[in-house]
Length: 174
Ligand code: ATP
Ligand code: MG
Image (cartoon, rainbow, N blue to C red; front, side, top):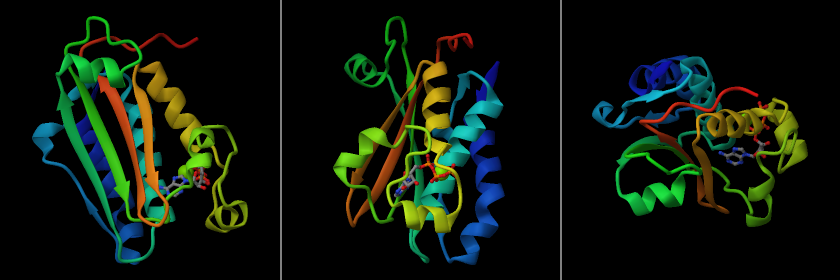
């Protein structure tokens, strides 16, 4: 199949706008022309973006800004750096979700995509959820021959970026 990231992001943001507005949070979205179609499963990729934006809202303070941005990458060196299977791929999209939340300490970052892993167990439990969101994100992104990268600075915020090839078929489900 094919997923239109423009439509997909619009539907995710629509679904979370009330939740954001209730806390005075603004969700910034990229220039739609940067949002291509990618090969893959639209429902699964919607779940990916939904989980990332949901986390950004959930863990940031009221009145914060959540910024979704997108870049199309064609530089072969960058494709090799950010894609697990760069061979034959001519272009990829990098879709990032940035928040001005609490940030995540370095030692936790490699473990965030483990099932049920939560940084601050008590706080996370108060906020609800199960700790599966990022495990699902990683699984789906991998199936699409992409990569999830996490950058975070304590006290400053976090950026979750997914890299997806624009011109190769997703791996078949196991
Ligand atoms: P679920 O997604 O199942 O509702 P969850 O949000 O706790 O629950 P994940 O999305 O997998 O689970 O995230 C795992 C943990 O990573 C979270 O509990 C939180 O501690 C941390 N985390 C995720 N996103 C952010 C973020 N944007 N800022 C700060 N911490 C985050
Ligand atoms: Mg989550």
